[in-house]
Image (tube, rainbow, N blue to C red; front, side):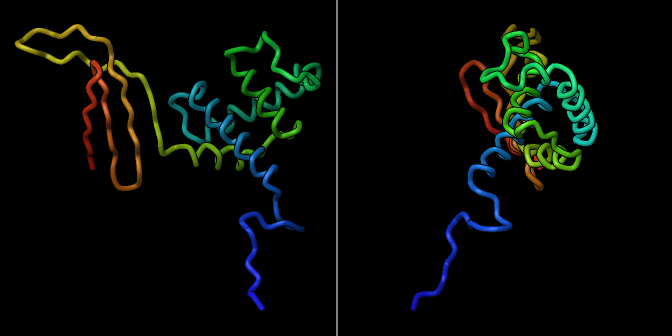
Length: 160
């Protein structure tokens, strides 16, 4: 007789279904996106307080009229309320706890992507006039890898 080996997704009492895990992952992705766009310079704790407060206010007001819509209303496009609408839609009107929001933000903290303006390089005493490069930093526990793409050229650098 073969030994019992459970599958990748255990089924039964006490286990979340794959559909539920996908919805949780999508909710966390929206929370990280909202923090990246609208909580710049805040710690995870501050960002979680800010986002959860906005979720509570949105659910108490405009969500009451908009929960039945299949798509986000056009008046919310490219605003924080669009992401809040998506979060509430994926969680079936449930607001995640402060601890859950902080955990979701902490899981996405390792990768930072930003378009930053770096002072132009000096060449022969004159400043070059170029577009700002794309700066990508990937942070792990022991090192930070930085890749700067400038004028189509990729340069890699590792700092510890």
